[in-house]
Length: 245
Ligand SMILES: NC(=O)c1ccc[n+]([C@@H]2O[C@H](COP(=O)([O-])OP(=O)(O)OC[C@H]3O[C@@H](n4cnc5c(N)ncnc54)[C@H](O)[C@@H]3O)[C@@H](O)[C@H]2O)c1
Image (cartoon, rainbow, N blue to C red):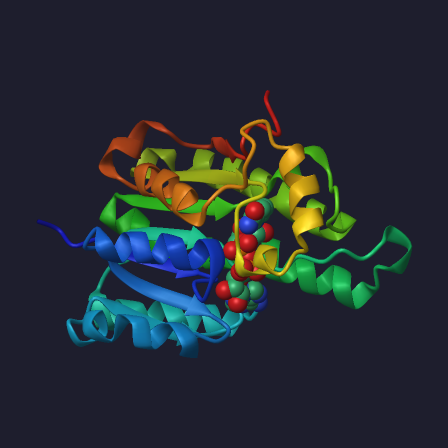
């Protein structure tokens, strides 16, 4: 059976780590991408020995680093089937206080990283006539920010537009491109919240609890499977019912 190769950005913690772990347990080869993967590496020592995983520290807002990364994966494994653009930078700065630096940084990581990573794998997926791209957007990109900044919200809405642009252009090549829009899914950041803030947040969620990263990973696993071939250009809400449309 063909061994798929997946690239997951922002795979050092949270949703990216859960998605990468799910892929590994399904037998997919996985390139973990993040700014610092030291803590994660030791958990996958056995898989690394078996040549099932690789780890690359890089900043997804750096164009040259993306090109080197894709070349390294191709040299090692010879194909790229799945790309999950999950790395994200979230800020909470008020509109009046957003600087040009913050504006550029958030957009270059969230939208630029998504665009240029997808652009870099395109020729490979086209040649293979099979590919799956997932863009990790957000509830904030759909309804506007609640606690996040306007620039974060704009960047997440930008990912939704990119999803449709790439989906339309790539549909004839067996490549699907979809967005996942989570809200209130447990991450290390959430574990630092006070019980009162967590309770306040939970009250706004119709299912009455926060989400778990594995629930997002299972959704992504379906979308990147062979059964996902008829689903493209779509946005999947995973938010406990906070947004119903
Ligand atoms: N957890 C949620 O409920 C939620 C809600 C909405 C959207 N999201 C989105 O899901 C994605 C993952 O969220 P999370 O909650 O796991 O976040 P997180 O902050 O726990 O993890 C983000 C990951 O991205 C990496 N990263 C950040 N900037 C990077 C860069 N420039 N280059 C490479 N890696 C970088 C971090 O190192 C980390 O591994 C993000 O895009 C986020 O916007 C999450």
